Amino acid sequence: PPRPPPPPAASAPSTPAPAAPKAAAAPAPTSAAPAAPAAPAAADAGARTETRVPMTRLRKRIAERLKASQNTNALLTTYNEVDMSNLMDLRNQFKDAFLEKHGAKLGFMSAFVKASATALKDIPSVNATIVDNEETVYYDYVDISVAVGTPKGLVTPVLRDVQTMNFADIEKEIASLGKQARDGTLAIDQLAGGTFTISNGGVYGSLLSRPIVNPPQ
View 1 (cartoon, one colour):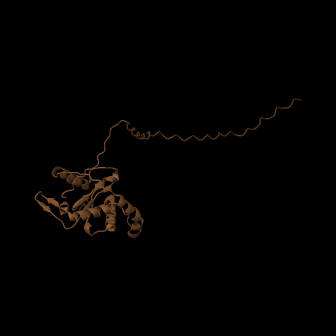
View 2 (tube, one colour):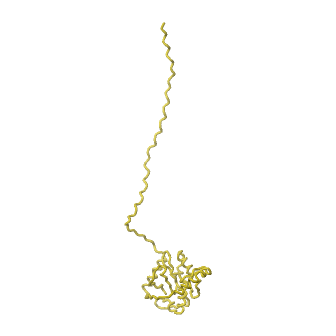
View 3 (cartoon, helix red, strand yellow):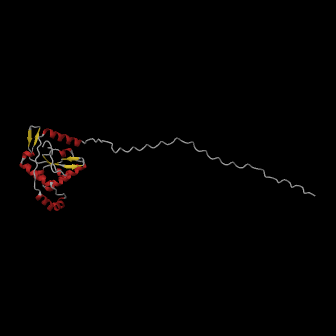
């Protein structure tokens, strides 16, 4: 006899598959960051520029005095040739011993200063000053202004009572005043009151120069 059909297989109740997690929504775009400032354009190679730097009080005062000297003094320049052979030999012979003993270099300026002081004592009229175009003042001392080059220009600090100084005293004082001049620590009164001035343009390579009289000298 024919077999009865098999009963239908029982099926497990179907459960819905879990929904896939939704991706988080991307944040709304914010406004763009401000653009970096553009680099300044390179200066044109052919551009013409200028820079203004205020004058220091010292430079103003020096300029005023020298211009006043040009306007009021009769300037005369003479040139004399001097044989320096003996002085050069003297310096070469004693410069090392001088430095070891005194702690200062032996230069030519000490000889120039000492020779000038001796001459000024012998010729008092050259060591004098004229006041208000009315009086001539004669001094029994010698105060010599010595030109010193600095990054800001030439200044003339004063060596006081040179007639009492020897070579070592002069070299030490010139070195001290030169350092103060380069450091910018000179006081105004250290630049005033000289009775005579020595200018040494040779340090800049000049052969001849016409200095301006430093009033009231």
